[in-house]
Each structure stands twice: as structure tokens, then as C-alpha cells.
Image (cartoon, rainbow, N blue to C red; front, side, top):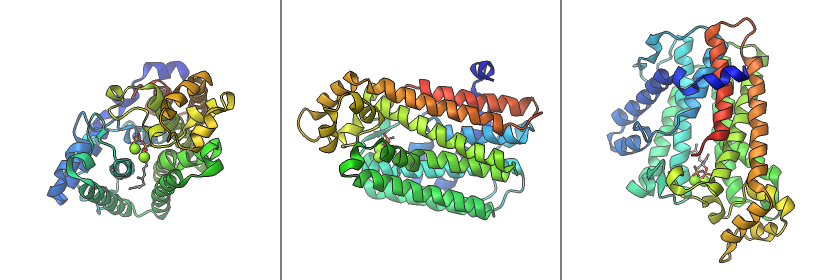
Length: 353
Ligand code: FPP
Ligand code: MG
Ligand code: MG
């Protein structure tokens, strides 16, 4: 599988369907609340719509579990209204992908308000362009839309799991905002917060796809673990890029985390070799020169390398789950989707934005 994963482009396999899911989402926002067209344009316009990692991995997971190659008809947008239950398993998987992306975008809209962010994905953030009030309401609308779509699946376990994602997202943000004392220096606290902020959505939506596919419990558990490990790897790399990346590549400001007082994995891991970082962490890099001093200490303490190694461990743990997800004796399509899920674990490590 390792060699096969090198050869496959994970984003190409389900690109048509992911496009259909995005289109459905954009259309539903614009047609229901025309005043939110600007919001929809900001977040779902081709080129600005991000990597669409979540819908991609969820539809690949659906393929890896079900085995049947999706017919071209699934790449045509589902025109049913959000509250109408789709009977076909593939359409149900698409709805989980749509719900996950909707929640993700809602959380970014609110996050950019909380962080006073001026840019997102290389463009002005919605709060910068249209003000905090509209950005908050646009996020609320997306959450409402995700709830209606979730109800259409008529599956209490799926509702339970996705509702917990919302709880985790808010809890993660509050944990981050209110961390004090020893929590600021704790890698465990950071990892718990990171699970809540990033990995919970991937883990729980992956489990939902498995439940909808009637996958055996071991495969559903592996799907959850895949999402959890991938989410942790993804966020740790994000935190590395915040330190090593330039804002022009990232499409958002660099060194944002330290400037906001946050010590992430590269800092916390560097502090083991460079304990002079700890007082800076405790005072949230608030004194003049703290951010520059911390950057130098992170380099001296090997923080970027250590964080990359931790991300690689989680990516490898995610890849190891794929064997438990693809049924034995699966057909060519399921195996290709499995290879693509492994390929995603590699891409997460090598991305530059
Ligand atoms: C991005 O983090 C933010 C998140 C992953 C979650 C934000 C969650 C909330 C604002 C709670 C409200 C939740 C919902 C569902 C509306 P970041 O600021 O570290 O990353 P960035 O560099 O991409 O901004
Ligand atoms: Mg932010
Ligand atoms: Mg934030």
C-alpha cells in the first residue's frame, strides 16, 4: 500500500463529487439568505474554497468501505432540499461530507472574529470585509443549515456524534482562550485542545460515514482513529507552518499563534531542551522582543523538528488504520480509495500551506 499511495492523487479520485457537495452548499446559502451571498462567495468560490480536505477524505472513506465504484451520476449535485432524506447510501455519505465542511467553515468564520484575523485563504476574511456582525451571523446560518441536513439523515447516532463535534469545537476554543498557569506549558493540555479544535470533526465525521455504510464496529472504530490521528497531525503541521511559513504562502498572517499568546507543539517541545522558553510561554510572549526571542529558542531547542516528528507519528498511526477500514477481498476501487487515504496522511506532512 505504501508504494501505491505514492502513485495516487487522493484529491482527483473524488474531485467531481467534492465539487458537487461544495456547489450544493454554496447554492443553498445564496438562495436562502441572499444577503449572505458575500459570505458564500468568500468561502465557497473556486480558488478560495480551501483544500476541501474534509469532504475529500470522507468520500474516499465511503469508497474504501463500500467497495462499489461511484457512478458518474453521483458527481451531479443532489438537488433535494436539505431537510429531505436521501435514500441512496452514497448521497447520505455526501451529506456527512457537506455537514463536516459546513461546520468547518462556520468555525473559521467565528474563529476569524475571535482572532481579529484580516485574511483567510489569501483573501480578506469575512469579518474584515463585512464586519463582525455579519460574519457571526453567517457562521450561525451555516450551523443552522448543518443541523437541518443532519436531521435529514434520521440517524440518532450520527446526530449525537456531530453534535459532540460542535461541543468539542467550542470547548477547544474556550480551553485555548482560558488556559493559565501550568496548562500553558503542558503538551497534554495542548493535545487535548487540539483534539477538540481540529481532530474531533475529522474523527467523528469519519465514524458517521462508517455508520452510514453499515461498516462493522472494528472498521467504524478504525475510521474514528484515522480521523483523530490525521487531525492531530494536520494541526501540529499547521502550528509548525505558523512558525516556518511566510504569510504570502499561508494566505494568513505568520507567527500568529505566538503573537496571540499561544504556545503550540514546536514551542512546547523545544522547551524541553531550551527551558528559557518557559517564562516566555507563561507570560504569553507579551514583552517586547518575546516573539523574536522565542523563535530563536525554538530553533535552538529543535522544536520544529520535534513537532514534525510528532506529526509524523500521528500520520503513521492514521495510515495504519487503513488496513482495518478496507474490507479483506475488497475490489479495486475500495483499494484505490484506501491508498488515497494513506496518501492523504503523507500530504498532510509535506504541505506548505
Ligand atoms: C482555527 O484555529 C479554529 C478552529 C479549528 C475552531 C474554531 C472554533 C470556534 C471559533 C468555536 C465556535 C465553533 C463553531 C462550530 C461555530 P486557529 O485560529 O488556530 O487557526 P487559523 O490559523 O486557521 O486561524
Ligand atoms: Mg484563527
Ligand atoms: Mg483561533
